[in-house]
Image (cartoon, rainbow, N blue to C red; front, side):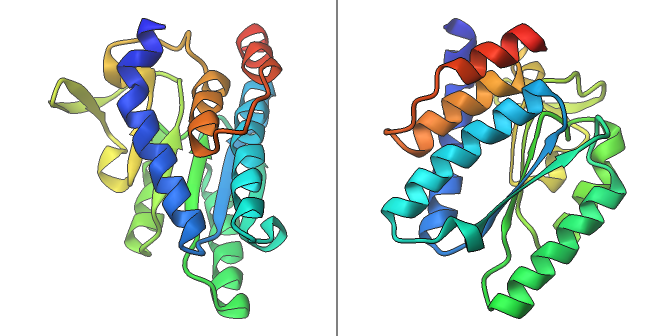
Length: 197
């Protein structure tokens, strides 16, 4: 797919960042939109990260967390819940700060407060989304920058590459999941995402 090829370097970056976090003993927290696309996208990441963790002798029960979000943006209450859980992971279990992955939302100006708060607290946040960011603040190396980019570790959205929302989050996350672990394969997930979204 020419569309996926255009975004592939960013997908590789995200997969690499997640693999490094896992192998470095960092917990992974996935916050996703509570619809079919968001759930399919999060499951793809969740399953591939579990495979990687188990291969590395890491118990996913203590290092992998997934939570749905009813709002179509990264709501402040969800962000506060994530900070509370992250604080427990650090304080109670003595782990490093978890890496946060926001899926199927997180690209619009409504998300700025949550991303900025996490950024200021020293958390790394990755956003994988396909909704129109509505506001662009510039361009760098042929890639559009959104209003949330400055607060994120990595951001993948088709609109940043001159594309549209036809490549949904489930498709994007499935391709990233296959890069996270080569043994991951669950072809129905991106199909379900594409049909339902």
